[in-house]
Length: 312
Image (tube, rainbow, N blue to C red; front, side, top):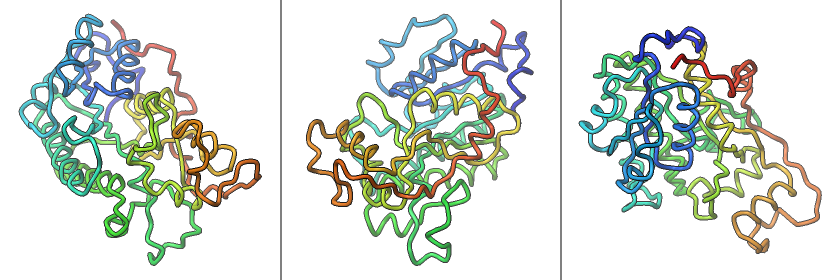
C-alpha cells in the first residue's frame, strides 16, 4: 500500500513521481495541475500531439508522453520511474461516440495499463477512474431489492446494459472488472473512483453517461460531480494509506425538479421542452435519494486540498 501523504520522503524522487493517463482532457489536465502544485513530478501521458505541444514547458516537474492505451509499450515508457498511476480512459478522436465496440476497446486498454503497471517495479499504487454507471444499472428481476440503496458493493448488470444499449455502463463495468481481475492476479494495489457525471464546460446532451438519464432520475441515482471535488477525491485516495476498493464519487444528487431543470438548461439551452414528462417546470417534486457516497465522504473528512504534501 502507498504510505500516507505525510510520510512521503522528500529526498526520494521516486516516491513523488506519478503518471497521469489520459492527461489531455478537462479532468486529466486539472489533475496534473493540482499534482504539480502539491510538489509531485508528473508524467503526463496524452494521446494528441496538439495537446503535447500545449502542455510542454508548463513546469520543470512535468514530462509529457505521447501514449496510446492500446499500445502496451507506450504505456511502459510513460510509467518508467513512477510510484503511482492515475488512469482514466478517453475515447480516441477517430471513435468519439460510445457503441458496443467501445466496451472491447476499454477492456483492452484496461488490460494493457494494469499489465504495464505489474511489469513496472516502481509502481506502488493505481487510481483507476471508473464511473457510477458501473454501479447503478440494476435489472428489476435481480434478487437485490430495487428499494435498497446503491453503493460501492453494487455492479451494473452487464446483460441489462446490453439489452437497453447502455454502452457507457457496459464499457465502464467490463473495463473496471478487467482491471480488478488483473490487479488481484498481479498483486497491484488499486483503488477505483466511480465518478458521477462530470459537470465540465464542454458537457453536452450527447455525453454517453446521459443515456438513461430519465430512469436514473426516477430511481434516485442520478449523480453529478464538479471538477475540483473529482480531482481532490483522486488525490485523497492516492495519498491516504487507508483507502481501499471502490469509491462512489459525487457531490450532487439530481433528485428534484429544480435541479433537473437547471441541468437540462445547461445541456439544452434554452429549450426545456425536451425534459422527461415527469419533470415539469414550476412543479415541486422530490425523488428519494437511493445512492450513497458515505465511504468517500468519510475518507475525505481530514483531506486538505490546499496544503502541499511533498518536499521539492
